[in-house]
Amino acid sequence: MGCCIEKSREFYTGDSELKSLLKAQMASRRLGCPYVFHREGKPIKDFRGAWNAAFIEARLEGRLFHDLRRTAVRNMVRAGIPERVAMAISGHKTRTVFDRYNIVSPDDLKRAAATQEAYLDSLTGTIPGTVDQDARNRKRPQRAQVFDIAAGARGEIRTPTPEGAGS
Image (cartoon, rainbow, N blue to C red):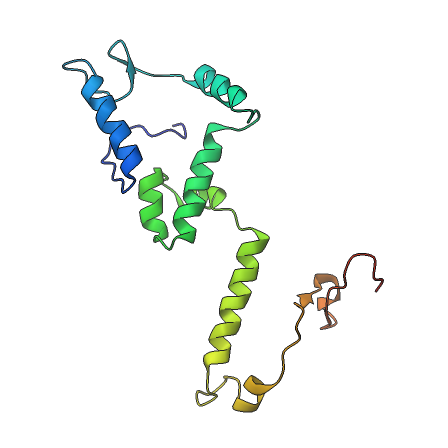
């Protein structure tokens, strides 16, 4: 079984421009043709030639069709759409393949650290194991701290220095 969608399914869109395009395409199809996009009433099996020509014309050579799928998955997850729903929309049947499209970036890790910090700052210290009020009021360093994996075994945390400033 390949990576492509093998059965039809419902498609929902809130994008009015896309909705207009799909309606126009449906209106222009042949009577009795079940396909929205087709060639002479037959399903389009390979669009790579047209895809490559369009990307060359747009000066975006080297992009792959699946780059769009990866971007869509990332956008859905970052927008807060539950991953099971994003999987259904993108046609991913397994978590393993979906996770390959949902790539974690350094910015994602920074946002996660900031979110966790905001959560910890909101704690009052009344729940066992949380930070106390004095810890919340201590000044935090203005620059981000990076946990050095190599030094991590020794428990060291370093503050990054600007390029060329020395260590």
